[in-house]
Image (cartoon, rainbow, N blue to C red; front, side):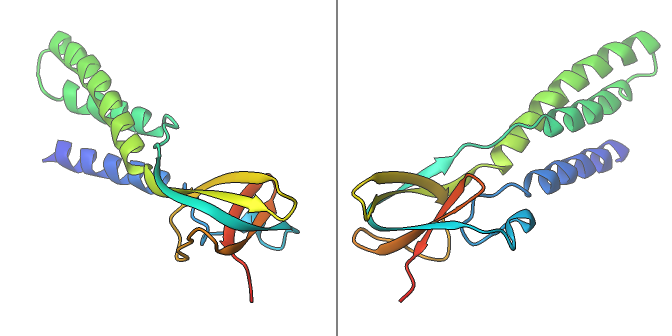
Length: 155
């Protein structure tokens, strides 16, 4: 029972830490608030669904490894077996933790191809937001600190 509680807490920690990452156009980071952004006008040429691959920051592997080592070493009363099972548990836990982190940070997104007013074309990948864009829509590209998001043009 103790192993299950420890494992559940580790999974919750992984999910909580990885949930912080998002490329949603509806979510503005606190550091981007009250920051001047440049705007470019354009027209949507195409929109296609894509998947943004999950990240592996190492947090999942570390947490999984620790939990696996604890769970593995608790499986025997013989010291040598505890050590071997602890190492095996750590390796298995680290692999599982990495996989969970990668899966939990994967997100649905769209690739938007925009033609700017000067004729240049840009491609922006962003998470699916509340605005559904389609070819022919007038949009603005909001550029803040090297990050770009596409929104429907006002008016």
